Image: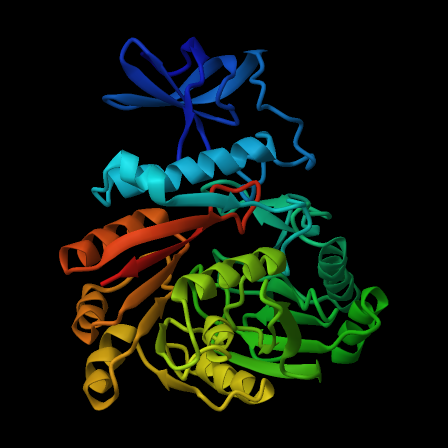
Length: 459
């Protein structure tokens, strides 16, 4: 196999990155934009010892799962890897990836995984679902200011005026900021030189309340002509609730800085979620807060987590990686006491404020890394009945896992955004006496390969 060879393939599977997978002469070939079931001609672009990468040249016989992407730039943009796959097939692919990771990484028996797998929670409408648009600002070859999303595995901005998984309003707001920049000669930040001002525009929406926040991320500590900026944004969103400035002077790829200043309106916007049991919980969300980007699916995910916790009004619940308290407060209405731990100080302040907002006095929050805070405080408090974890993609630290085991909760509910690290952590917990009873995959991110899983373990 050589670079630029043309090969005819039947696509047999999909990779974790959303590429089609085919085989020829014992070599595995990964094909961007191919769909499982396609018969296609591909051009080899990179050759390794046992596998190759290829570009799709022509679809000879399309898969029954192939659809026309609703977005014209889906192939160029790195945001949606599998928009060319029917949504029903996307759900099946994601559900199977989680099951395969539990078998291959977690060491579970295939038949057992099938017996405890609950039906995937899909979306009724897999477009326009994001409540947050985080959009980089740049310039094209002619020097024109552009906004869009990075191409796959690059920092090249693919211009977009209407991302199909974001609201149209959020993208219109981004371009109103560009109009302000052009009118007031505000420079775009340049990654190579470290000069320029505006780096990103972030738009957050309260899907239940209609409140909107706009956050302009800058390489500096101020913006010129703020009245003009407010005027341009309000031309799109007259009821603008919050306009804030986020200061990020770092020379790296981190989007948000630590300091945020209010330019107009209030510091946070409000949203509410309603669980399937009828509970409604309100949250104030600041620019840096972690808040699930899919409002409707978040309600399903947290409802399932509450169901798995199996609370009866008296339990002590510990929520690790609690963020602004979304899961903690969902549990607090049905628990005796909830203790939340989170490393981000602002999130802890938000969590405390959100507890007060909902009139919940049985929720306490502590700031620090879970693997540090847990060993420090668990001996001083009653042991929990339920531990809830919702860690970042890297999963739980081993120290945190071992401390959880020492605390001997009756149940552990694990919410995960990466099923590979979930499977790894479940294997560790199984070896320490906790057993996976059931799990559900919840599709939070239609047209991408990302998903969420909630699992219940018992001691």
